Length: 443
Ligand code: EPZ
Image 1: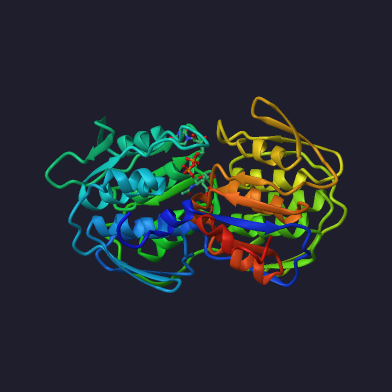
Image 2: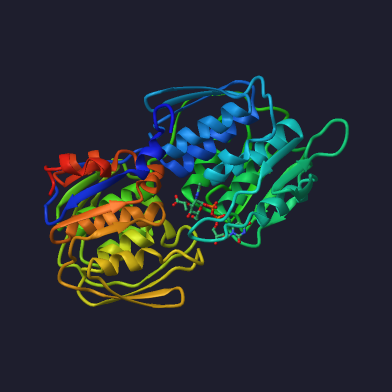
């Protein structure tokens, strides 16, 4: 490997060492939402003016999106949590396969490229460990808006016919409330001729954040956050300054679970409570007291009781917190039934939790978790972004040291998680596994 390794390359040689049993205290700070920032960045393709975002998290996925947008000719400047993007001289409508393949969210560029340029050629994002991740709904939506779309040689080729390529509005009904498909159609429809409606739209806060940014850029969108979104097409969009990305509800939920699993009264902020209502209810049901104010949440854990979870589209319990919450249930009193209804293969963290002494039985897409008094530290690997977070949470409560590998996943979605947890008192450190002889602090 020549040259400095990238963050993700380093992650392959690193692990987190977590010494369990340590109480936490103080405040855990929540960064901007990954799943909002990524799609807001692609919205910059819709105008030649500057789009400036703030509260952007420091993640390898964000760095990946910067690379992809620069390949398309977007000028991108990053300073701290602020990113300025300007697509005033796009040089390509085809993000490179290698970059798209490593970052699914880059597929969202197809909608704005089509809306702005009248054409786009975006590699099909592969499946991933949690599921096939099809994009049928994205393609159906673009075809409904008048685009000719074909899938050839692993890429989705989309083009608007005619000499003045402009999409035309249409009534669209999604077969499933897909977050990505809703966002793709939203961004394609804002410059279309006429009024588009999206029924069975995804209602996630990240969809609302995108609609809010687009409206700040001059779009005319109503109903985002509900099941029917109306988009009145406009001629052009203008730039926006200082648009703040919403706080990451999944990171906030992960931190609330960190407090619960270590029995630590903690404050987590900033949080927009209505972005997490289903999770907050489950935390109350399992014995935690929550004091909510307009800046954040104070959690005071009690004796953990088992509760049942079924993942659903928003406003139901989010699939991205299923693995973290399962870690919590492994040490709760009683039996918890956890059903994963969104992805077909998002139970791989069970085997790793079992290595730590968890008692879990799997029946199809449902896990039956018998709470045990305590987990025991072990070397484990996170199979996806949220499973990796679940391993860290389990390590915080386990007896002894847990070595969590798979940090390339973790670093995609959590902004300096070990620094934040350390600041709250966790005994956790990132270790280079090639230098094990130099490791002393945590062991
Ligand atoms: C977004 O993915 C998030 N990613 C995911 O977060 C999140 O888990 C997911 O929404 C659900 O909330 C980003 O926003 C970058 P979907 P997305 O399309 O848009 C099926 C994380 O950990 N489906 O709503 O790809 C699909 O197979 C990541 O941060 C179709 O059947 O999710 C899945 O079962 C993981 N056909 C379900 O819908 C389609 O055309 C949800 O997918 C599209 C999706």
